[in-house]
Structures are given as C-alpha cells and as structure tokens.
Length: 169
Image (cartoon, rainbow, N blue to C red; front, side, top):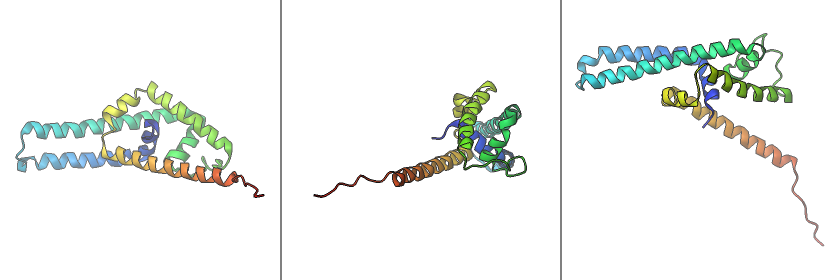
C-alpha cells in the first residue's frame, strides 16, 4: 500500500467535496431515521461514524494547508506533483530533469516529518482515515500508478542493457 503521506496529499484537493457528501449523507440518515426500524443506538453509531470521518478529513485539510505554508520554496513542487496545479508558479518545473526527482525524494521525507509534527502519523491515519471509501480508492489508484511506473522502468532497464550474445563456433 502507498505511504500515508502520499495518500493524504493526493486526496487533499477533493476533501471539501467529500465533506459535503458526508454532510448530505448525515442529513439523509437523520431525515430517514423515522422509517428505519433498527435500534436508536445503531442509528446513532452510524451518525457518529460519519461525524468522526468528517472531523478527521477537516483536520487533515487544515494540517495539509499548514504544511504547505511551512514548505515555502518547495510548495510549488508539491502542488505540481500532488494537486496537478499548472500555473505561473509551477511553470519553471521541468519534470524530465534529474533534479526534479531528487527534489521529490526530499519532499516525501519532509512531508512525513511535517505531518508527524502536526499530529498526523501512520497510526492516526490507520485509525481515522484508512477505512474511508474515498481514501481506499485513492490508495488503490496510487498503487496502480506505482506498479505501472515500475513496469516502465523495468522495460527501460531491459532495453538499455543488451543481452550477451554467445558466439557459436
């Protein structure tokens, strides 16, 4: 599975929409509760789960915004890679240069440290976000993308190194 910091930063642009979907689901469950014949306790548990998911997502959004502010010079690289932002701030980034990939490696380590300082670590992620459907889908897409790039890298390596040829005598 992809690292939690990648998942958090890839899901950040859509957190507001996911929170609005959770709000709509909450209202739907509240208004339809009179037709639900399950116990009041189970209905309340369902509403508490939705509320906890919303709180965790809003905390994540706030922490990501704080991390972006503290990154300063590296923020354009994060916005370019994780959010797909292409504007005058990210226009200078050439993703084909080796320096870009070195910077991305530094950023991943720095993101993890900054998130942990702000209170989001792997344990918190597993307890609060990992089981949300949206987060599971983001993680699945990241895994597929990483597998794809590994396959591409393997084929490039294979093409660069020619097979030894045995001479037949």
